[in-house]
Length: 602
Image 1 (cartoon, rainbow, N blue to C red):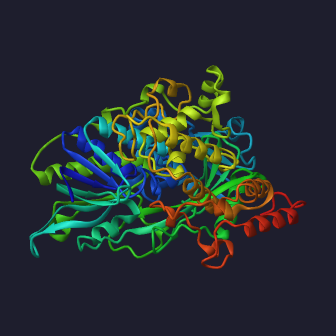
Image 2 (cartoon, one colour):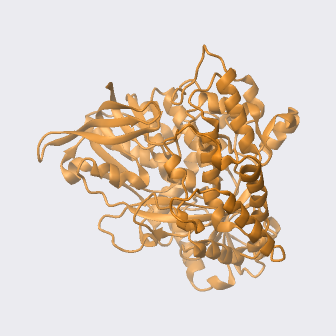
């Protein structure tokens, strides 16, 4: 059995885990990070993309608000190219009258959040679709963030500082030594899901940054950590109706925010306490509620084309709390298991927001230093990650590069302007095992057609590379140390990277089937109007023409094949029946016909 030794082992490849690895590596520690799937596969890759100013929590949860505004200022410096400086409005709609707006303004002043009341007419000049019946508008330094890119950039910074990032490595047991009262976690037994082998990793300190799964990881050491999984459902519209983050000026509630992120606008969110972080089923009432509440900020938004619905699970934590997940603090929580449970060598970091991931890492590694008997200052607040030289993200940067460098003929995904070189470089150099990994890397299939045209092109290219790639430089998932992610989403800069090597392990039929299945899960809840017609076209392409649900996969399955399978109850199919079938295509056809004269009606 393979053995590894390190000073700090980090469990979890979301924003917090990569932040911890980055921080610890910068302080000179040997670091290994393990993630059971791809980076950002969990909650980090499933939120609406808001860089909080803190305004959202300033009245109800001022500690969380203070953390947010502090980190907001830092991340604009350290992760500039992952952030679009949209600004944010807190809007008093006719439904939000009362004393809350004055309390909001006073609380912002106390916490130190810049907050300026502007005339409604001025707000309407910035956002013409904003509800003209709004009575007051407050401007705050909200912004939007690309959590996929930011996590890759943080992981790359950690690698450059010496950390090892190992994805598709699932922790199956924690190594625990000593008797009652003197127990110590000394590492973990990990399964490499790609090579199908077990690895023992010995560590002086194990840090649990598994997000919504942190309770399950802690249980491997017999430690109870009651994470409160709060599911948040979001809905993406296929146009960017607004360019400023719009919040309702009231206590946080369901459906009270619209976030412009890349080319779309995201309506969010719900907050439902669930029993299992894998529970991501989206209920019809959640989509309906998002659209109804969105109307109060932007009248008419519900009549636009809905692109997709998805959900993420927040890793909320409040010791002993038994109420609703909406009422749990969003502040970070560090659990010192030596002090709390009498188990040394083990820390859990949970709670918090994406905005506060760097701070979460700082307090965690501070505590690790204390327990390891060393003093090493944190430097992440002053250390930019690779790529910041590009400045803040701006909408249209890909189009500008495609036109300037005449790359129109190289496009694989017209919706998100993904070129063949971008796809090949990401596949060859990033720890890629599924097409869904490439979606997170370069936004493949995230546009209005939801993979209708780019997916078969991508599968064909990967198959071609698996046959004709170079033998002397084979790349395997997990071998990514030399890959530079600074320009991962830049069409123009792919030309200067090394040529791709042969790709191993790609079964194109399996990749295609799993990716389509994953896209389909987010489409089922929003099939009406124009998006229903789009899916009918995709069904004709993939089911009727390509017969994709019956392509041979030689009995193979990826580590995520089971995850991609759709809950049959969500589409009304019987358990055990094929998830994507000609019958579903026929059902789409019939439904499209029925709704021919009812476009835009959910």
